Length: 270
Image 1 (cartoon, rainbow, N blue to C red):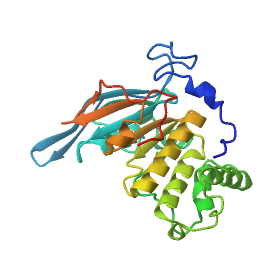
Image 2 (image 1 turned 90 degrees about the vertical axis):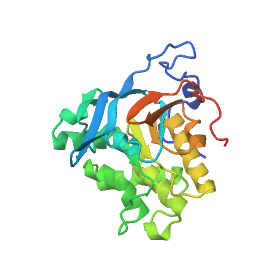
Image 3 (image 1 turned 45 degrees about the horizontal axis):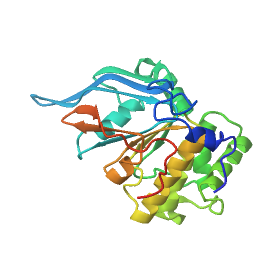
Image 4 (image 1 turned 120 degrees about the horizontal axis):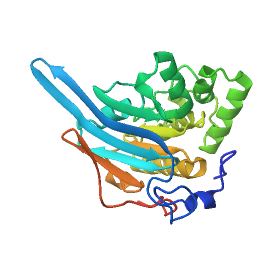
């Protein structure tokens, strides 16, 4: 595959340690700047007389270019946490800092602008607009940003070619395979060059071969663009290929002690 336009030198990126600043393995924890931080995030719902605590004091920090997995049983609160991190849901208490700004203290307009600038979203179901072509779907976030149409289409074309859909630009979602639709969704998330990708079971609706292909693509783009990657997944094989793993159990978020792959190690095997 060809490199993304403007991508930093891959060899230099692969020298960055799991939490380092980028100068090499000797960098200590926390030296890379944080692009996403959750502080004591709690979320509860009232069901009649019962208070259901979905999240209890969740805390995590994601550095620039870092790959993080969030795992847990079905219904454990993984998706709720991801929606709160992305400003799509509000916590009952706590803070979420996106690129240094408390996303839940912003106005709706400011929150939307921050999401468009700093965040990209990939879901289990692609959520492509059925009436638009792949090119139009991918260009949409740039058009929302008021990028000129010609420039938006050029950027969309480049990223679609990068993910292997250069021959499918004018195809609508129903004309694409499941794997192709998810690749288009990844392209749409990346076209704005966000600092963070939040992915909710991005391969959960794909067969094994397509799941591997899409996830390998996300990891490759993470390395090339330095975009942080936060993935909610039930697939431990995928989670183990991230730099760090958090687990939610009974509403509490904790980091696993066993370190997964370091940046620069092979992440294309199963």
